[in-house]
Amino acid sequence: MAPWTSSSPPVMALAVALMLCGLPAGALPVSPDVDRCVNGDHTLKCCPTPSGKQIIDFTQPPPPTTLRVRRPAHSLNPKAAANYAKAIAAMRELPPDHPWNFLQQSNVHCAYCSGGHRQAGTNISLEIHGSWLFFPWHRAYLYFYERILGKLAGDPSFALPFWNWDHPDGMSVPAIYRDPSSPLYNPTRYPQTLNFTNIGCEGDVGKGLEKQKQCNLRLMHRQFAAASDTAELFLGGQYRKGDTDAPGGGVLEGVPHNPIHVSTGSDMSLLRTSGRDPLFIAHHANMDRLWSIWQSTSGGGRTKSFHDPDFLNASFVFWDENMQRVRIRVRDCIDARMQLNYYYEDVPNLWLNMKTEVEQVVADNRMRPRSIEPEVNFPAVLGSSITVEVRRTPGVEGQKLIVGGIEFDRGAKVWFDVYVGSARGDGRRVTARAAAGCFVHMWSSAGASEGSTMSTELRLGIREFVEAIGAAGDDTVVVTLVPKIGGDMVTIGRVWIE
Ligand code: C2O
Image (tube, rainbow, N blue to C red; front, side, top):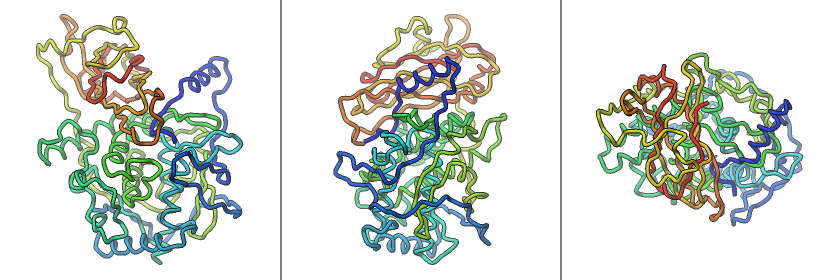
């Protein structure tokens, strides 16, 4: 069972070595050998029913007269909601081995992430989380899912609803999913999180609903800002044929995507079972919407995609609404509206233009950097906060902060926050700081074997935070790591900016 996030120092070291030798680090794009699927050691057998059916290449659908419009689940009109429920019911009623059957469809997700499918031409399993495959794979999956539902509903403009958990009105499990007699219901959801979806705001729990919602909005703003500057920060690290581990996902895959899974319910909290809750689709429609928002927001000449052929030519295979097996490439699903004929209803993204909050620190000795970089003995255990002054080059675009060599037992629950601050004057005191992101690993039950060490890194874009604290012209910033859960179980290898 693959973990939610992982990284592989040996693979990365090899890539670095290849680059140093002047050889291209690029290998080939990944593609699944869908006919070679391995049911893992868990009891859930999610490999698809074997099919001899030939695989055809995806072709762009002809432009329809009306585009599909995905709308927020919490405000779906009753007719659309009934339509949606009916289509899901029809999916559930199909014969168990029908490729459109509800469980077969949920198993498609499972097989792509639980060590199921091999990468074509290798014995290595294909993992669609924790890398640049994350957004495109889920976009393609939802695309076919939506068209199958549309077919079942007899509605060619049928569109999936999205769970608008980044808007105050959408920060709970939407009503249409909560009726136990509805096909949209899933009995494994946690009652304590039904009425408020904490998208990753541990801090303000218990301070009242309004405060918690504001905290979600601030977190959304911060995570989006940290994800915004480069394709790697938003989409995730490079992953090519032959890579044994995913290199680490984009900022938003880490938070809020992962915590929402884990806090929603037991099916939702595991990669392999999450597709069994219809909320999964709505959750991912919202993630997909965030991708579209990122693509359409302007910003300092930033790159909106990877142009690497190993990204663009990576491919996946799905059943489509005509009962064909279709190979779709990442290049086919970069632009939802132009290539896939759907878009998201415009809703207010209250977090988008928020301002980074800056804590001004006045003569507070606790905020003083304990020591500067050469004096922190890395690797260091995060038993209490670590504060370190880190070099940066003013004026360089797309810089990211990397907390590297994060190591802990896969079974541990880990959460730490990251702040960037400016050091000024006498005693190199931190005078201002801003929250820049957090690292969350909560998947002790995700099936990863306990007792093995997880080694990964956190990458955050810090441009906006550095500007907010007035340190844009400084050649250092002060980075503080604050443990919230399981700090003494975590080792930090190094902190740097590149
Ligand atoms: Cu494929 Cu939300 O995970």
